Image (tube, rainbow, N blue to C red; front, side, top):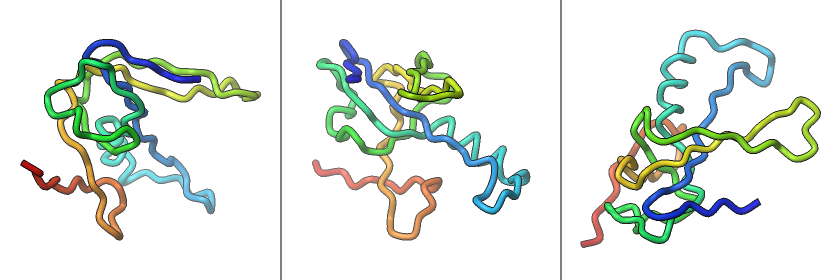
Length: 119
């Protein structure tokens, strides 16, 4: 399935938080902090044709930070899912993208790094 936003909108797949380690230990102490950060970062999936506000220079597939309550959330059912799982997305106005995120080697994905301006 291909998602095609219209106008100045973008589609972002929000990050998810692991609630349990691979060994079965439930994460409690840092979960709220990580969940809060995950709710405002994600992967840029698609951009509409009229995107501006600096977002036009962020490539699709890049990680972005966005306003916490931005956009509308929707889910697409995962093909062949017995449990009716959905992949969640957000349709967001381009002005609600706050920054592109570049990860340096060794980063855990929760520490935004400032991007250099090419101008």
